[in-house]
Image (cartoon, rainbow, N blue to C red; front, top):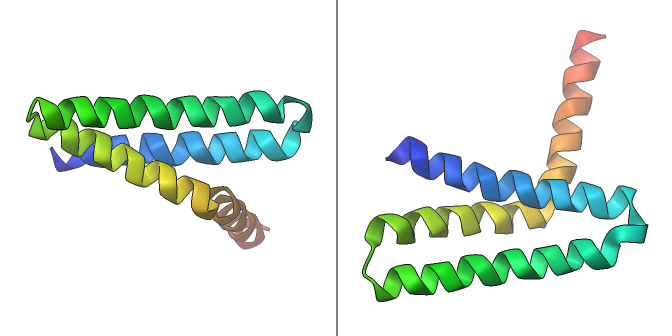
Length: 93
């Protein structure tokens, strides 16, 4: 279960890092990307509320992990990823 939770966390993290990259590299689609961001969070929060209401602890934990990853992704994961890639390229060169 811990590995599954980590997978959910990484999905949230990766998706938000992707959206941040897309926002920076394709400003023409920024409104659509912002709408996607709002939709995603609303969908996950409504699912979390439903899981809490149903007392589905496994689903609650999975959704919470995905939301934690998403928040971390929004708080700079794309920049951290760029820095990691830059360090790797410097070590190889």
